Length: 456
Image (cartoon, rainbow, N blue to C red; front, side):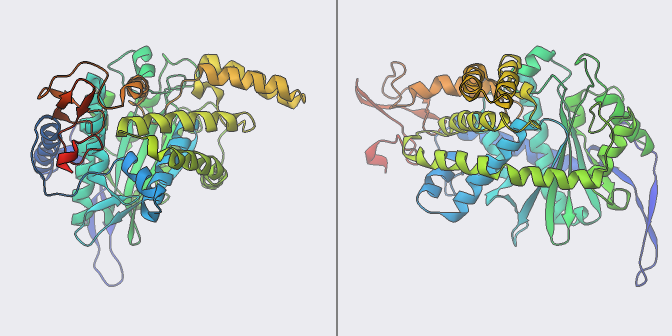
């Protein structure tokens, strides 16, 4: 990123003399970023090492969705909250790809460590490396997101988020074609992206995410990068010549006095470049009023979240690996949100794929005509061909997980010899297989559900 032309904002109060602070700080250009990058590289390296070496650990075991489901099914309220929030996030991100705002709190303990839904934030990023098998493109994005996570942790502890908002622009990759992007789970019909703002509000840290469209009609005619460039020029900086992955890895710290309404100020600036609304070719509405609409929309989807959560807890005993838990969440969330799409016209049918979209439209028309049986048939046809995703980068992995789910029992998918190092479907680590006979195979990780009894 080019060095910003310094713009200053006056800060002061009746008790404190006025002084000046930069309007924008470029995270990648700050002196602290070299250390943060080294810390991130060490963090990622430790995850890779964890997956390839058998070593004894004294640290707390990492928490996956499967762990939370199991604990919640046994009455653990904190685990239940974690499962519900994971489901709620999936439900909303799966159904509303643009024209929506979410706000999520982040807790901070007495040591300054950040938590989301009771899970340490570093575990959220670590699990992405543990349980995904990313393409080269998505690997770079995962690394950029982990780097941003370390930045947020550092800025929260230093107090920088008291005065600044940490702003990230996450757009559909432009270093792969639209077909490949779609296979990764990006919504390429509208080239939807996210403007994310993290800052401190009162005593709490919050993450605001605004889902925006990157094109009006033709996916090949994107306006997202140009619109963001125009915003940055007003702040004296630029992403000129940067790929969307590089943009993701080079966030900004914008003084909060410039963004009094938070992320909707950035959305309004984004829209002003093309006279759109959340990047869509729609009449402009009151952004403040629309934020309330988004909040009401999330409340109305709670019953969907509740159904998916109940079904996950009911299946707790059958979950043998984190990948299976992730695949099941995908399946249940798609089923329940697609059923909701029949009556909720705010949900764009295209989020389930072009084939399913037409069936959903037909089902809606038939329902309006009172033809209940025919409507249900069309909806079932949609379910048969639907393909949706919540988190970009997950769709390709989810497809693989669904195939792997049939091979979850006792590592018996292929012939494995005693002592051979394989990736265990139970704990998803490279481990030494324990094979006492041809019919039975155990994991050598004592914390794994498939561990040999002698290790427990």
